Image (cartoon, rainbow, N blue to C red; front, side, top):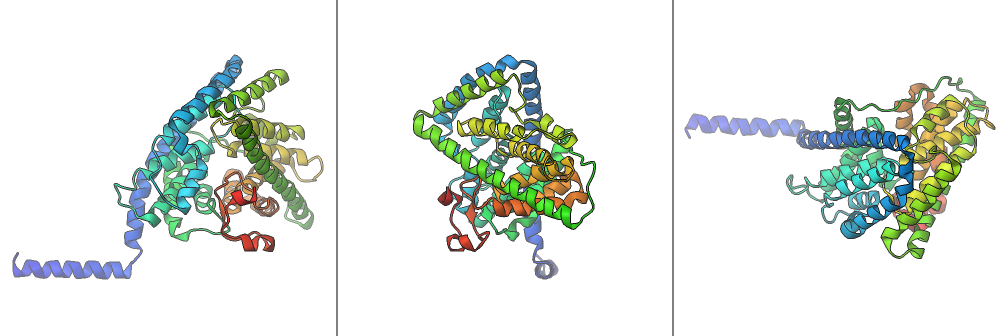
Length: 435
């Protein structure tokens, strides 16, 4: 190398060092943008395929009701599949949360196909479950495979799983902003990891965009009338939020209790979903309706259009608790949307607010109370229903979050910042300590 070349090389190194000193965040941004593009593309594509196949399974089941009679057999096969091949990934979303808090071994990739097959079978044969759990687990299993190729350290791996959760949530519901905050908020109650904020938002937005490129459509829920912000509507919103928080706490407590009942009374795991499947199938045929199985999207839409009866939310809660606590796969979130929207619509019998607004408030507020993610749920309400209802949605989510106590559908959540003084001495405890 000549003298001039050496001089030019030294100048280039100097200018590079100077540039990075002036913009110290740039290497971080470039690194996580690259990773987020990969995660967003893969997770968005996986979510698109999952949503399309789930829509097909739902349509096919509704046109062949006799399939529900086979739910116990499907339950046995799901239970056997996890018993033989999936014991290390059976914790599902709790495994993702545990990995963020204390990263250990790489999440096995088989979590993705196992939860996909289990969820598809659950919906195809008539279980009452959601889709968030599947989307998050697929995203986490896909993303964690890049830990070794990208040589990510312990802290980077935590950020990676947060970004994956954000991508999975944002793409499966079409709410990238809520997805990003959900990923940041869900694993530690009362605290947010701001060092993961860029990857979370980048991955969620990219994944949602990729899902839309696959021509996947999300359901919209218009609210026809939103009252002027005054004292009485605010008071009514607080009362509704209290009801939503109590509902969320009841759901969380009962589903964990029901799961322990199945486990303590049926020692052989594959038989648990058999019993649950028999209960669900008999109930469906006895009632003569499929209203309370599957995702329940038509009923959610209906809750925004007319006042629903009080028993709708309770029946959906029972069907979902039996399905998931018995060992079927899917998620709790879409059923929680159903429960919250149906409860909100029914509360218009007693609370003088428009049933559409109450349905929207319940849709996100029961979810906020059951997952301890009020900020994500506020954003979700704004993304789904529009900014005009933002204050009402925020009131309902905050009040529900406070009144749900330290209960959660995710037992591995930890309390980083207690909700009130009563729990201050128990900060950093797991939710399971309160169950």
